[in-house]
Picture 1 (cartoon, one colour):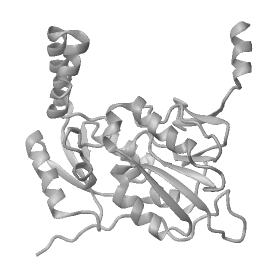
Picture 2 (picture 1 turned 90 degrees about the horizontal axis):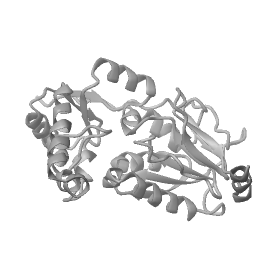
Picture 3 (picture 1 turned 135 degrees about the vertical axis):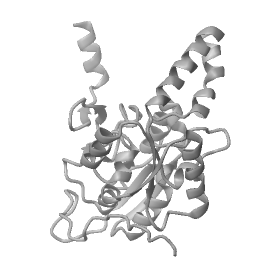
Length: 286
């Protein structure tokens, strides 16, 4: 018999009003800049949103070069003017500080308070912390983990987790930077960290659980020689983001003239005013 599929957990329809809405519901013009790991999910949720959402996708593999990804995202932000959008949705977590320093120019930014994309697939920081505390050594995969990989991109798991293939791919870079002996040492050191992993998790969510992509996750679990665990994905945060429901405890609103900075506390990120060039020069002179 076919295995029953768990349904993704979504937020109930009775949601509080956004700070951008009055008592009369209005349709907002939103621009969403998103890592393509969320491609299917964001297209699905944007289609159901009461707002008009224009989608801009950023290549998943750029996570390997955070400075380049930050530059690409900032250029997209800078290109969106007030007559084009009421707010810009950033579908990212802090993600290795990729979003640290991103600046709101003309339009407010809205971003989830999340360490990485795993939180956005699990639905809350609380669930993320529960899973991490119980099983810190976990490889997380979704159907898009492999679907959105380019031929030259080795990493498929979510978050910061590496596998042996990804580590080996860095060998040439290490040789160029540190020499052959040091490169070998660094590769062996990074491979030793793999011993701390104890399971592979596949975050399942119809209608995105496609058989040929599920097979790839099963193959990766076999390659890791680790048990495969299936957990239901929860799109609560992604749905709230697309629906314009942005409570401060779950989302950061960044006004124009402010930038995103890591807060190193439970809030994860904060909005910091940008100092005018003259102010910076005055402080430096002092």
